[in-house]
Length: 128
Image 1 (cartoon, rainbow, N blue to C red):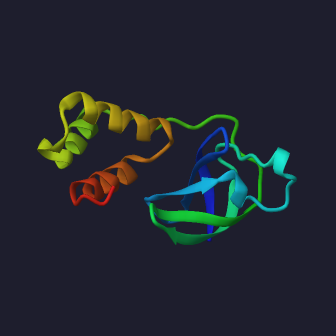
Image 2 (image 1 turned 135 degrees about the vertical axis):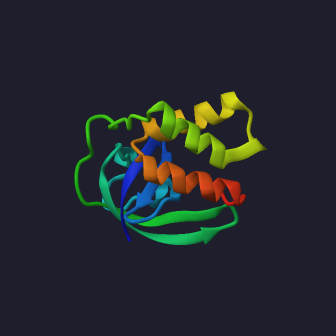
């Protein structure tokens, strides 16, 4: 699979496969082609990987870096009407503050409005 790094922090992070809405967890030990001391990923890097199932869900394996990343995430701007529609989809399962933080986190990671709506629907079904 081909994807991009959407988050990376001290040895682990998440990759979003092209055309997918769910993030896949990745550990530095899954990165190939680098000495152990240099295994690191950056936001926006294009990677090739295999998805494997673990006891905690999908996980990336055999990760190969294909391109350098973006210097900073491109934050999506969510207008008040869009935010309200997302919060309506999320329903009563979260308090208002948690909903705001959830939407802000995804927007900061660069998810589009449509992707955030899709994730809200997945979250509503209890899969996220």
